[in-house]
Length: 86
Image (tube, rainbow, N blue to C red):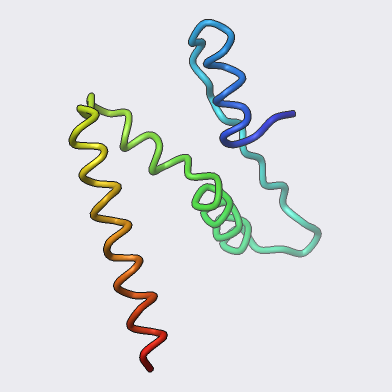
């Protein structure tokens, strides 16, 4: 089963079908529900499901997307340079 970006790419190449990620977290023996929920949240974060859903709520113009990515890049570089100076 494909997950993440590879699955989205596969769906896009098949005519733009909607991709619904299925993320399962099975309860382990003796594990509390709270821990299982925490694992689920971490997995959703790693896969980027929530960020992707938020991004697809409305159309984002290419120039706006480019500006946002450049801003994120500048901030990452700022943090990297700050760490190197310390």
